[in-house]
Amino acid sequence: MRALVTGGAGFIGSHLCERLLADGHDVAIIDDLSTGSLANLAACDRDPRLDVRQGRVEDEALTSRLVGRADFVFHLAAAVGVGLVERSTAAAIRTNVLAIDAVLRAAVPRRVPVLVASSSEVYGRSDSVPFQESGDLVLGPPHAWRWSYGCSKALDEHLAMAVAAETVVPVVVARLFNIAGPRQVGDHGMVLPRFAAAALAGAPIEVHGDGTQTRCFCHVLDAVDALVRLAACENARGGVFNVGSDVEVRIRDLAHRVRERAGSVSPVVLVPCEEAHRPGFEEPARRVPDLRRVTAAIGWKPSRGLDRIIDEVLDDRRRAGRPRTPST
Image: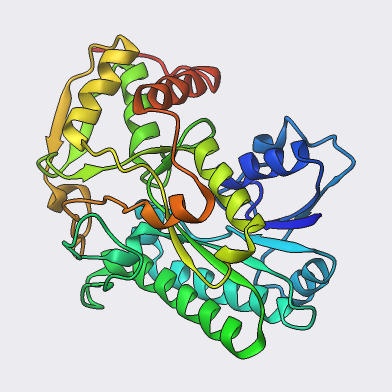
């Protein structure tokens, strides 16, 4: 198979490319390196079956050319992270919507199958936990920037399903829930690497809000396995699938767990959301996926637990260069 991975130099994308190459496939990448890095591809960048193109997915000429050569497209390119969306809300919306539009337009002539990486953020304010793929998406008002990312990803899903229905392009949607692991960085608000970096530096581990909000963390290699298996499953086409762990942890407890496993003396500090974010931020209380649909379709459930994820993130941060302990 000749696979195209948009966002292939990113955190999840680079792990996916390694898996595809290990499975014997040829892999092409489009990435503008805005949040990804060529360093993420160090383990496979000399493989002659890997073709890396630095550019924007919104460049329809480039995307059309590469999609036209592909047997399957994994569309992972997106503006991701609460911090990035907070700083550049309009740009994040445009990136997400225009990128998938370019991919789908390019896929139509040859009906190239596309897997769309969506997000748990599409569930918005919904309190119907665990979230089911057939459930309502409850997004907040447009003046609250917090919901703009989820809204843009929901629009991605609507566009993908509309194009699939009107042109018979095979599409599958994977809603990702808090994927974590090596190569993830906290620059754009990702909580686990942010906690890990603080713990290793002996700096305060800042928990936004009261810390009672819960999340479910899934190892990146488990998520990649799900993406590859969904892509190979013809019965999955036309479907939407949650991909993640269904084991909840309170964010305050996560901070203490990271500190303990790092052997750190960092204090855990609660920072009110109104101090940590600009106006328009709202924190969902819970994010828990219902995994029955993806398990029934491909027999998948995550196999790596939270302690392993934390340990690997800590090891990755150590390899990246342990920060100096702040002076007292």
